[in-house]
Amino acid sequence: MQQSNAAATAFYDHAGGGGSFNNAGPAGGDAGDAVMARWLQSTGLQHLAFPLTSTGIDQRLLPNLLMQVNVLLIAKEQSSADASASSFIANEKEISTRENNVARIKVMVCKRPLNKKEISQKEDDIVTVDENVLTVHEPKLKVDLTAYVEKHEFCFDAVLDEHVTNDEVYRVTVEPIIPIIFQRTKATCFAYGQTGSGKTFTMQPLPLRAAQDLIRFLHQPVYHSQRFKLWLSYFEIYDGKLFDLLSDRK
Image 1 (cartoon, rainbow, N blue to C red):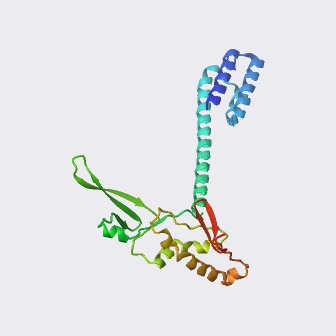
Image 2: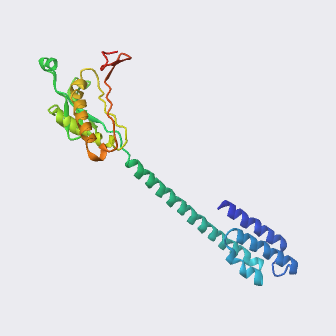
Image 3: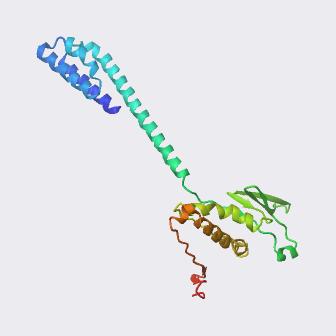
C-alpha cells in the first residue's frame, strides 16, 4: 500500500510539472497520457486508462482520479491479503488434522494402596481418584497452627485406583498399542516412579500378556502373509549398567 501511494504521488508530481494534459500541447499531452496509461497498466488498473488516451484529462481532476486509483489499489491489496490469510488458515487446519492422526503420548497413573508400614503407623491415605483426575490432599498448618488441607488436582489420560486388577491395567495401558505395531509404528510402554511406588508389581504381568496378543496377531491371515518376525529382549538397567537377563545377566 505504501508503494502504491508513492507511485501515485510520483505520477502526480510528474503531471503537475507538465501542466494540464489538455493544454500542454500535443507532445506533452500524449506523453503524459502514455505515462498515466503505463502506470495504470502496471498496477492492474488498465481499464482506467482508456478515457485518458482518448480525450485526455484536466489536471484539476487528477487528484480525484488518483484517490480512486489508491482506493482500488488498497482494495486489491486487501483482497490479496485476505486470500493469503485464508490459504494460511487452510494450511494450518490441514497440518493440525495430520498431527491429530498421529499417535500421541498418553500418561496413565495407577495409585498403590497403603503398605504395611504406613498402616502400622496409622498414616492417612491422602490420594483420591475420580475418573481421570487424581487429587492429593496435603495436610498443612497455618501460622496460628490451625490445621487445614490443601488440595492439588492432576489430570491424566487415565487414573486407576488401588483396587484395579492386572487385567484392567493391561486393558487400559498396553492393549491399545498392540495393533498399531502391525501398522509399522513403533510403540513404547514404560513405568516411571520413585522407589516403592509399585512399578515392578504393576509391570510384571504386562509383558506376558503383550506377548500373547502379539502372537495372536501374527497368526491372523492378514499379517501371517507378510511374514512378520517377533524378537524378544529382556534387559535390566541399574546403576548405569545394562544386564541381559536372557543371557545370565551378562
